[in-house]
Length: 251
Image (cartoon, rainbow, N blue to C red; front, top):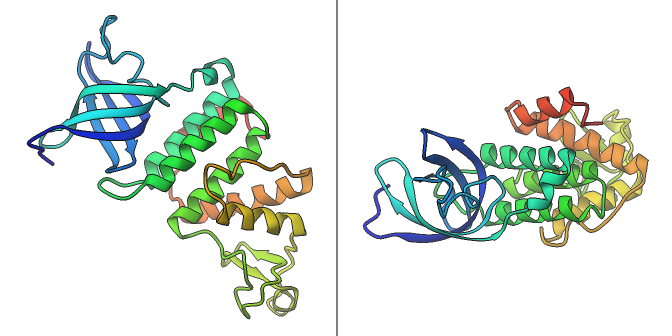
């Protein structure tokens, strides 16, 4: 895309990569134009105005000028750096996983404002630490799949349409009432609180979705569901998760 004049976008830096002695290539998830690649020239110079804003998690307004295959950043105004994440290794890696996840599932020149809201809210939740990091992850994953339109229908039975959902099938990503679960030979019965949690995640705005806690059983069931659904819908091995596993930062 070649632009005749600069554009302003609101977004978050998903990743930052050194490309030579002075410049960086950023991947930015924007409200207006989806996922974009942009060069921050001179960002590696100590006195550069782009030093802080060219780091992962930086959120704010970017002024971009279009080249043939990418954008050049001509100005940035960062409103949130999420610097607190640097003080907590586990939270920092979880945030990097969220960014890697978004890098894979979002697209260029598409409406990704809901995914951007979700990412911003998830990082805020990691900083606040009001709920467990693992629960933040499961909420993030299920909400992201909901935004993509591939999360299981959790408000009614997949087979008969009853609103009394009780069971989950990892084979076909279906939610069933007890009668249909029995006839389909599905034995993964969920706790009522798990069903409520899924419905809350699916129907609540990203700004408010990270606002509940659950007991150990419900958290385990959310983990079970999100693990199967992410594995089924996202054909990607995330490097950040592999690092977290290697460092024993994941349960």
